Length: 283
Figure 1 (cartoon, rainbow, N blue to C red):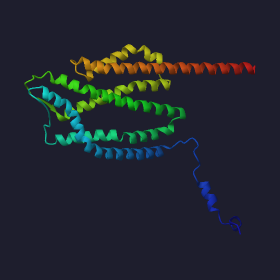
Figure 2: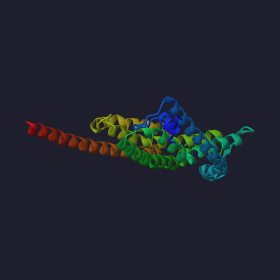
Figure 3: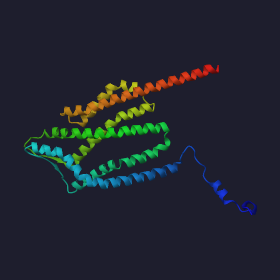
Figure 4: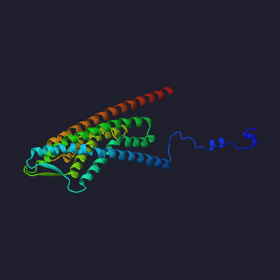
């Protein structure tokens, strides 16, 4: 005897009817977005904490690396130069600060991936491809900017210490010195990524390449002011070492934007010609 004939309800059929319909557009409700954000945030925090553990182990080599300019100055000055830990907890505080910074850098692939996966459902296929390209260009440029800041850092320290009499001892506060090195590297790294942001805005149709090119005088002035603030006023060489690559990157971004505008205009003309041809043929 079948289930239908016996009068027993078909549980399989009712379960299928109660099942939530598929969402072909992949849209999520607000609660689902919040849950996904929470899960990805937790994964990112765990990755950063694990990176901090490894970063705490690496604080010794990092301190040795940023101490090199101090040791070079100490050998050249009669009074000597040294890094000073003024408080009882200063050494521990600076190591924890360094561990957090290194942990964020080590965990960058994880939290960048989590951010990307959280944003990806809202992007179209071509937008995802462009975003991946921009991300692939931004990461090397950011690292190159950090290396540029690291390269000019010893020169800045040398110029700043030269204002003190040679026979006097120069003490650099450890926490301030580390913050100075970190902020310099991060500032230059972020400045190197600005041209990528301009290209991204151009590909999104927000700004034209000609508009960016028209503002080249203002851009050069902003770069000069940034280099002047990031480097000592007396160190003109470091200022130019920082300005030149930033200006080159700016004009490279302008060139990419101009090429993209030309390609976009060409596609628009081809589309209009096809549309006009279709209209004529229909008549």
